[in-house]
Structure formats: structure tokens, C-alpha cells
Length: 68
Image (cartoon, rainbow, N blue to C red; front, side, top):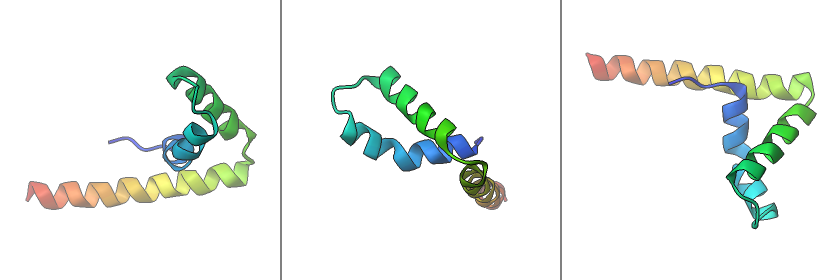
């Protein structure tokens, strides 16, 4: 499973964006999330990228244990 800072960010803001834009469809919601991502500073994006790396390591450990 591939995780990126953007996918972690999307998961974090998805509910709020849907609540703020109840009449918007999937495409419009995706555009809004993308705009919010682009508006983040490099430091803010790095926080999400670091969370994604941590999540990938955690998932790799789980998958390794299941394969034993």
C-alpha cells in the first residue's frame, strides 16, 4: 500500500470539505482538497509526508508479521 503526504492530508480533511460543500460532487471536492494542499507551506506538507512514512513503516511491519 502506497501512502503519500497528499493521501494522508486528503483523509484528514475529507470530512470537513464534504461538510462545507454538501452539494459538490466528487470531482469538485477533489479540486477543493487539491487547492488546500497546494496552499500549505512546505513545512506543513512535510508533517503529512512524515506521517505517511510512519504509516508505511507500520503497515510493512504488520504485513511482515502476517506472512510469518
